[in-house]
Structure formats: structure tokens, C-alpha cells
Length: 547
Image (cartoon, rainbow, N blue to C red):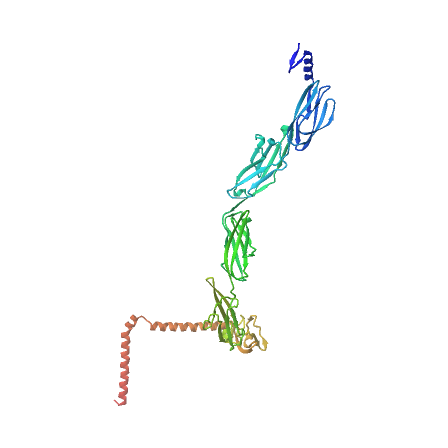
């Protein structure tokens, strides 16, 4: 019988041969799984079991080159493999063609992992965006990205279920900034698992990024005097409160265009800078303080006025005059002071006219030695009264004197006690004192143990550049008993004197009541006395007349 197949009429014998041939031969390809790194080459071998194969080859859009062949096989080189594809390997046997397919998977390890923190400095309680991306990786469905804060896993993402057309190898999360997160390390780990394709595990990590947290809510404050004197060093400071981290605040201070060199300190949430300024130009200027922390900057300005006010000039015609010399004392304003200051000379009888100096004429006396003169100048600057004073001391020269009060002529020492000759000379310049005893210079600097031999006359001479003066001092050394007896005698005399005075006061100032009681008695006594005197007078008259 004839059989109609695909529009062709075959005899049963031919159909049997075709069926037997198709069942007998096979077509295979090596490798059975192809995993190729992006851009590399792949060797593919196609083979058959047909003893006498007909036309054969491979079908692929990749660049192919046949490198070898055999009776039942062919080997091809696929170059620059950059895309996933399916390769068809075919053989024909007895007019029958069979083929098999090979899936080629291209992979690209995550060699570059990029982590980005936006922003790098974040204000407290604000959000920070942590983003991780891998620019080149394949196959994407086998990739896992993990975000880490230190060693703690924050977020994990895989791409297995994503639409291939929209796949992007990146992951993004937001983190709320807190103070304790300052200087935290963030990183991203990428893992490409190709075990399902007969490959291994590839992994890579990003560089570590450090997140900075800051708090900077208040403007800095400047502490400076509104008035600065030209050429004078003045301390200034710039302070910032409630700032974090305070130890990293940067201070920049300027006086006009002149940059200062501040010394920065901090404690807790406060930071401050101290500096010294020295203005060299008069007039209105500006002190500024720029504070920066991370991305933040704030600037504060304070106006200052620079003035010139040197101390007044005090002139004494002769600082070391001799006693009796006439000298002039003048007080005047400095030439650099503008406007002219108001002047006052201590001891001057009158105030000078505006712009005129104050002066004083005096005759130097011994008691003027060491006298201080002061010249006071006052100036009004920006509504504030400023005062400066210059002082000088007058030194009057006079000859030595040995006064009784400081150098007594009679001195008593107690035998056996430590004694020194009491004599202090006066004079300017300070006189030197030399005392002799029995023709020998007596040591005035060390105490002497008093003996009877120390009794005698000491001759003391005080000398300075203006002259000298001498004085004899009589020293009497008494025994300790004599000293005690004399002391007791003096005490007894004083006690008797005090007792007599006390009794007299008592008798003269008795209470009036006592006086009134004694008054009649005293009157009677007086009357008796008068009567007695009268009787005596009468008796004398009688004798005179021979009665």
C-alpha cells in the first residue's frame, strides 16, 4: 500500500527506513551548560551518533569559527560573547536532520560597588539618603545587595523577580540622623550567586563612607569693647552655644582686613575662640567672626571705634633738687591726643584754660622728699569719658641729721641681754652711719651681749654726699637686779600717785546728800573757831590796855 505523508507518497518500506534512522542517531553539544564571562570566548563541540552524517553545523548570531572537525563531530570557537543566547547544533543522517540547543549565559561579577551618602553632613533629626549601585553586573537576577551600618544589616535587596527590561542594580534607603550616629560607617556588599548556572559565588564591597551629624542652630556672639586704643593689645572672643560636635568648630576672626590668630577651646556643646587684637589705625572699624562646621557657615560682625589717647606728659624741672631749690612742675597733653584733653595737676591752685598746660612753682623742702605729683588728662570718646594719669616722685636732697627721737643721746642697756645701739640717721641720699667706742668702730648690724664694759660714750657720725653730722651717745649698762629694783620703785611711786588722786577725787565729788548731812556740823565748827578767834583778839586788846 502507499502512504501519503506531508503531501508525498511513500511506500511502507521507505517509511520504515526513515523511522529506523531517526530513532537510531542522536545529536549532542558540549558543554551542556555554558557560563561565559562578559567579552570572553567559548569553545563549543557538536557531535552525532550517525555513522555517516550529512550536512551539519551550528546556528547562532555570535561570531563563530570552526576550529576542528572529525567524522562525527565539529568544534567551533565563539568570540566576544557579550549577550545571553541559544545556540543550535544540527546534524543530518540519511536525509533526516536532528538538532539540539545550548543556552549560553553571560555573567559579569560585581567588580565595582558604589556607595553614596547624601548629604555627607546631616543635621540632627534630618534624613540622610544611603544609595548603593553596581554599574556592571550580570545576570541581575542572581545579584543581592546588602546595606550595612557598621556590622549591622540595614537593608537587603535581590533582583530575582524584577522585569528584565527595568532592572537596575541599585538600592536606596533613608536614615534619620541622631547624635549617636555621628561617625558611623556605612558600606554596601554585592553578591552574585551563579550556583544555579554551574558557577560559583562572586562578592564585592564598596568603600566605607562615614556619616557626619551636626547641630548648628545659633549665631556666634562677639565679645569686644566698643572702644579700642590704637596700638594697645585688647582681648576679644567669639562664642558659639549649642553646637555639635563642638570640638570640630572652625573659627576665623578679622579686624577689618587683618586676620587674627584665635585660640579655640570647647566644652560640652559650647565652643569659643579667644584672640588678641592690636588696632593700628584710628577711626571706625569692624570686628568679624566666621564660624564653620561641616557645610554650615555663619558670620557675625561688631563695630568698634579706634582712638588715640597717650598718657599726659608730666615734667619736673629737677627730680633731685636740694632743699630750698625752686622747681617748676608742668602737666600737658600728648601731641597725639585729639581733640585736646582736659588737664589737672595735683597741687596746682587753678585749672588751666582748654588746650593750655597746668603748672606749679614750688620751693623744695625736706618734707617734700618722696612727694608724688600726678598729671591727669580726661578725654570724651563716643560719649564715654576716658581718664589717664601720669605720676612722678620728687626726691629732695638734704644733709644728714641725728635727731633725738631716732638717735637718743642717753641709752640704758640691761646686763646680759642682746642689745643694739639705737641710732637711725635722716638725710637724702640715705646717710651711712659709723659709730666708734674707745677708738674702735662699733658693729651696728649685729646684737651685742651687754656687759659692764659697754658702758661709755659712743661717737656716731652720719655722712652722705651733702655733708656729715656727729653725735655722742651715752650708754649705761645696769644689772638685772638694779633694773628690777628701779622698775619696782617706779611702780610703787605710780601706784601711790594714783591712790592719792583717787582719794582726792572721792573727797571732792561725794554725793550731795552726804554734803547736806555734814553741812550743820561744819557750820558749828566754823562758829566755834570764829568765837575762839574773837576771844583771842579781846584778850590781846585787854593786855594792851592793862585791863
